[in-house]
Length: 355
Image: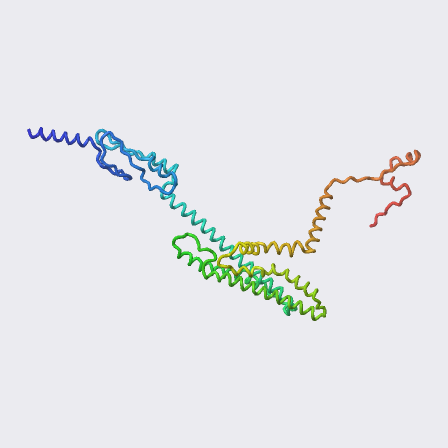
């Protein structure tokens, strides 16, 4: 009696167990208790990027299916759609959308900062080479011009490239430390922000002021020489000063007003600053190259040579002098003679070869 009761209860329990698939973990997802014959669905075991357009639809449309069999056992989970996500939509996965843009951002920032540092270094170097040019010109008008010993080249190289390198490296280190304190930005602080800008401004400003003093010294020396020669006429002095003013763009003296920047610069100031900063090379090329008489004559000679070269390559036709006899008898007596001998039978002298 008791055995039949126990058997009946056992069958009921087995039927209840077979009606459900118990919770199971397949090493990727946890499958909850599911009725027999039903298909359970779970989202793919990925973390999706919420800020990428279209990834929300992919998260809802691509799922994992697992069938609960009639006997209460689980079938193998089907991850085919998740594999498709990895193949065709990897940009929606957190591991990609966070890591790859970070690498791209770092690369772009590093390239941008490198170009910025190189640009600043070239700017300081150009001003230092202007100072070298101004000092060299001034030395030619003074006692140093009478000496045969010139300044060694390594001194010019150190002043033109070494000093800008030290200045820009110092400014870069301080600017990097100041920029790293801003946790809300991946980029540097603006170029003109911070008191350490004086590392650059003081170097370039001092070089331009020295060039201005060199220019005034050259004008003063020329005027004194004119007066010493008793030719101190106002026209000659003005012509001398006027010709000396051509050194202004070469020595960069025109950039001195740019060191004063108002708190709220107007459009006139910005336009003048852009013209003075970016037109210096054009002014120098026009004044010292294209308007120079020697350069113009050299260009004319080159154009003339090019024209002669083009004309010389054209086909030429040479005309030889023919012998036309005056009488028939003369023709008979000179049959068989070479053309070279016939040309000299009219009484002209044959040239003699000199050995």
